[in-house]
Length: 267
Length: 286
Image: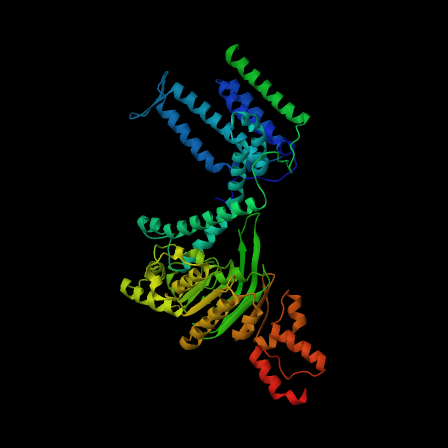
């Protein structure tokens, strides 16, 4: 299941969405999250869904691939759906099961909220699917740069993020290695009562932490030796270029917001 | 206890777009009581192969027979502990597996997992710590207060205390100084000779393979390309170079000597002592 899971993964390809400036993509996704809350009727959601569909097309990824990859998240959405269905108590009773009633408003809310959730998951996945972690970090740093005036550590934050991302695969490999070593010493992590299984995690976690701290110290030393002194006056190897398509993407969002607002307030 | 591998194949992330074949069609036997070396260039699949020797990995095709038990591709295996009790593995940089508060507890971890009583485990801990050349006072200390080399010894004692019939060593001396390296290898070899422990040595060091192995298995690009006693293997320098491997320094020296004098020695010498003896005997004729 983990191999198929695409949440938070990057899929290399050459598409409009892949080529977009990470800053534009970040603003795009965050703005979309805010804008989607304007929609509150069927037409609003139809428009938002169409907009999401076009965005998926722009990413060069197939819809089917996205849907199959996001299946685990769908379970969560289904759960939200049921929760809304049974616990919103407004309007007429549509279905009476004796111990629980389904109201008109419940059905409405259930559809809308799970729809909103689905669209949000698709959009945010598009961001991570089409953008390497390192460019997300670059984009974030660049967007947070103005905040440096009020002493916000934008560069440090971005550095922390990229180091964290960089070491995920390393730590995964190491977990696997230590697990094998302890299994060779007779530790059993996959069977037996729960209490024993939890106990079996200790021999895994302690070496993992010890090594992670050691590695962090080594990394700090290596950075210091090479004269690292924060973001002050530092030039970038990966430059960001804002192109016309980035402006267009954001403009399309303004259109979406306008359309949704129109449906909500005037029609 | 013999270990027999038959047409073993292992693919990482099988049946996914990230599939990668690491080992392919490997067949050989590790006979009881002998020292078998597995050599190969980085990425030749030797480390993957080693994980099959105590069922940490199951082949994606083929079989691995470990003593009485047979691990077969595609079959669910239950209760692998008895296999792991008999086949101990010392991994590369074993000091990374230490986790307990005291050296004593850490060495006892393995044996107690296999059902050895606490009292017996403690006895073993004291015994094996001495065997790896560490003073007994260390038992009460935290393993994290020790030096790197000492931690390595403690970790090795932790595996030896399981008292396995087969001991698999993956580059056990990597990162040690020359003296520590020598001492460590001599200790393993002594155990092998005195107690009849079957040794499997996965190594980059041609010197170690030449000096200790009864049989050398050469891995190249996931396949077994050769299997021979070291003397036979190291007499063919050209072929070894094809697999990205060299010969021990002694052999290189002998070859140079033969070239200079224009006389071939009757056999390849695998250690310095052997070469010295040969030179003494044949001194007049050279």
